[in-house]
Amino acid sequence: MVAPRANWKGYIKFGEVAFPVALYTAASSSERIAFNTLNRKTGNRVRREFVDSETGDPVEREDQVKGFEIEDGRYVVLEPDEVAAAIPNSDKTLTVEAFIPCDEVDDVYFDKPYYLAPDKLGGDAYKLLRDGMKKAKVAAIARTVLFRRLRTVLIRPHGNGLVGSTLNYDYEVRSSQKAFEEMPDLKIEGEMLELAKHIINTKKGEFDPKQFDDRYEEAVAELVKAKIEGRTLPKKKAPPASKPSDLLQALRESAGMSAAAKNKRTAANANAGKGRQKAARATSAKSRGTGAAQHRRAS
Image (tube, rainbow, N blue to C red; front, side, top):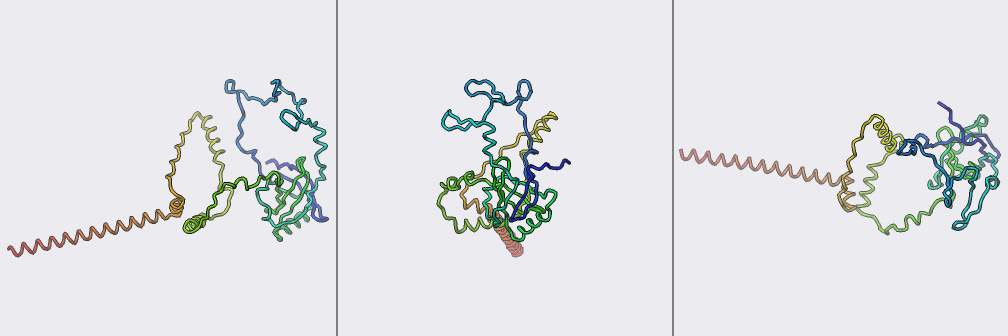
């Protein structure tokens, strides 16, 4: 198996202590199934081509340049060397600016995770920072130039090492007020709240990523296999439409109250049936006894 290639190499510095680290991608989508775009008529792959929006003529790579739109149809042209000069100089150092409680950063600010591994020398300082943060239950906020941008990185202990998550800037995270501004002003209490708490308690568990499979990938892989073998997959039946019900009734059904009530009614009906059968047998026996007595008197 080929060893992973570092995306970046530099230093972590806290106080006057610095040690070398290598940064590796912690999550990747490269293993996902990928499609190519083909010409349906020929079966050949098609290629992407940049064309002039007005003339329709192809534009070669050397003639393509970055531009910033200042108003409709007007652009400021930025040459490659100008863009390169505007990028902050990298000192290849993740400088820790502060240590904060691990749960202080809202996870909506999390961008991408990376593993930070010790690079050759500096293992003692690496372990010192890792174990010190574990004991203090803190994370480190650091900044450096990564991938041509100045980025804020949250560094946390993870397993035997450290994980660094790049953070979104405040202007990149949209306000939640807009998303929730039409929320109805309702107060949930009483039986509804108790039922909700009951359902939540019965569903408590632990997060295990191995339990969550990518069903889309599995379905596509099975489809590709079936096409190669000349098979057709059976069409899936549409799920039945849910019955309309109010929230309280749905909560009761989720909590199993309807089933319990149904079982109670079934048991009650069964007991009533047994009672009726017993009464019928008693009545029949009584009738037989009366008939026998009348027959003896007649004799």
